Image (cartoon, rainbow, N blue to C red; front, side, top):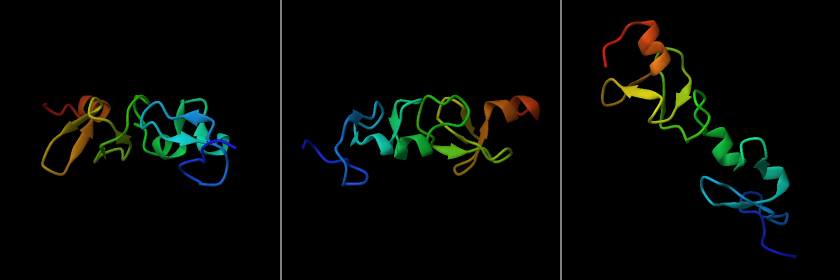
Length: 89
């Protein structure tokens, strides 16, 4: 048997996450997104391409640095809400 899954530690790792490089089993791999379950849960809900860095203070979606605008040291607004609410950025 080969390497063990880096998430469950039980089954054989047969996939490599394209974002973090974790070696994972089929149960811990999201084949649609091509990433492990950990990265899948932390994926930007707006573009679906990168890991999220925060959430929009208006709609609550988690987003990546390309999809969020930092409006204070601790707050972000997604580009959709910025346009919807006509926020300056």
